[in-house]
Length: 456
Image (tube, rainbow, N blue to C red; front, side):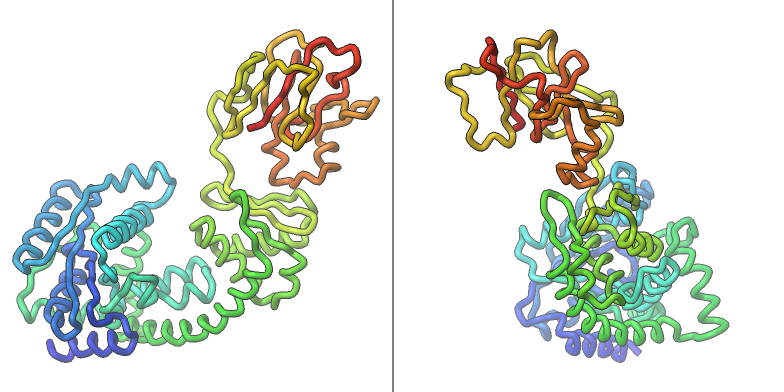
């Protein structure tokens, strides 16, 4: 039984070409059954695959003394095996709160971040994680329930970049039986028995029922199906890749979807094109409802806006959809006062006001620089975002105009309108920052004092 389990993993590694001769492999070691089996197996076949092995443990600080015991177990285990051991401690709960994510997501993000960092620093060519067939079945079910599309049904990949999953072919039972027969100790995470987490609920409640009532080999069946789907998705991915290349651009932290080019793509791929690009640039996995909302936005009127999790916003423009990350609201900062001779920061931009010699004015490349007459200036300036009801006299015009209409005429994208700044004096708009000054403040032959306005 022991030999057949090992040979099953060896065959999987060879078929998927997961390990190359001379590889240096960093193993993610939690102390649980799966990671202990993985490390034990790799050490047993170290000479056959001609590889070096080290291990890494992350203390999540979620289970008090129990977590510290896990860390010490891993330290002792690797010391007995005489292999390099790395460990670090992170406050996963605090990280999850700050980044508005679940504990599972936070732990995964921190864990992979540390693994990649150590691998780069110490020149490990591969990172091995102990995902198994049961993990894959849980992932597929979760993705099916959430409606993440065909990619989600392909399950956990056996390889992603330098990350490999050599025991993905084994069931949890096979791993536990192996460790039991060889009398190898491991740690058990007590939180695995709590159904507070979605994955634990499936693992402890739903999947046992499926195995008992429908298919005892459910994990193996899902694994085979996942492999088949991965084969199909590789073909589809090539088409999606070409569509993304033609349709999507990313600049100034905005994802721009060219709707004209999108129409040249098979409509059945729209959802995957959108899902792939949002995942790539914003690290967010959109669910089916989000994708449907995005697809509806294609035919919506200009200016229509929809919001997604984690501050992601999509806005319909005339010929495109703009997706961007909404800035966090700055508490108690609605406007900033600026004196002549000062430069002030406002929401990541810098505005300065200085006295200028009217005989040495430079009008070359003045998109972010303007000159105004200071003769009517009565107080300090204020920079703020524009708001509904704002009016001004655009340079060259005798009548006032609503700023909202002016921005539309200037073809300012809806996604950018909300960020537009104005510089005011005594409540009147002096400069629509970076676009146009007010007619009432233009320099004339009678101007005595000139001010230079700069957006840096």
